[in-house]
Length: 303
Image 1: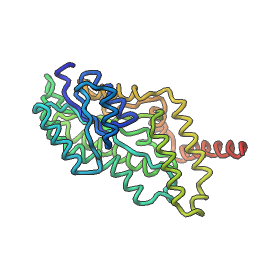
Image 2 (image 1 turned 30 degrees about the vertical axis):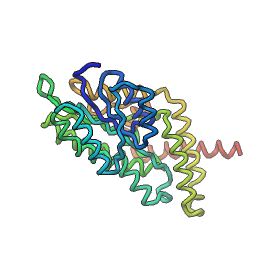
Image 3 (image 1 turned 90 degrees about the vertical axis):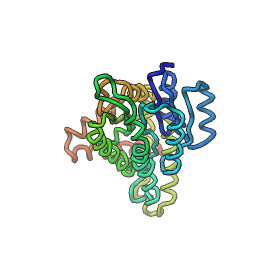
């Protein structure tokens, strides 16, 4: 292990991008506090990487008490100035027509993806500021917020998720400008479609939300929504972007002398960014509607 790499916190490390990132950073020499919500997830991580560099940490980003306990443990275990960075990766995806999404589900989306990011950042900023700046005096600790290609282009049936990711983008921009004079960098990771366990969770959540909605309302959206979910799953399965690509971008943000403000990972992430900048809203609306309509016709032909 390289002693000068220091410690990092990664939230949402039980599966998907967070798990891949925690393991990759531990292998590269960081001490990684891998935030998980269940003891079983902690045990699985420790089994996969038994070295002392990986330290599973029970952490619920929606609980102020849980965040405080995590902070106190880390502060007690590392040297002053030993925290290099916080990777705010924890997230959920509520996908359903907004008319069907309960206010409770909408709040949960914001609490995990957006409020949790802010709460973690506020709690750990004093430790990040204590990390010694590089020889040029430009950098100390680093914050890395994992957003999404949806953070810049809102698709139908992802309104709640887009609200949380648009918010994370805005918060990150403000933080980056506020913390620059304090030598703390803020970077955004914007992955495109990647095959991770979130897709199974998304389908389960979607089925539950439609089942809880009024039947006459759910029926208004069901065919188009089913087409949308299936198309997204197919994109994720066909994607050449891997979780390791995201982990690589996060490591760069944690180690580069001049980390980027944004890391777009995957061709579709770049395409979404370009489309949102150059295409008029009406054209984007038409393109998205045409894609969903084509899916509906395919399902009708199969039936």
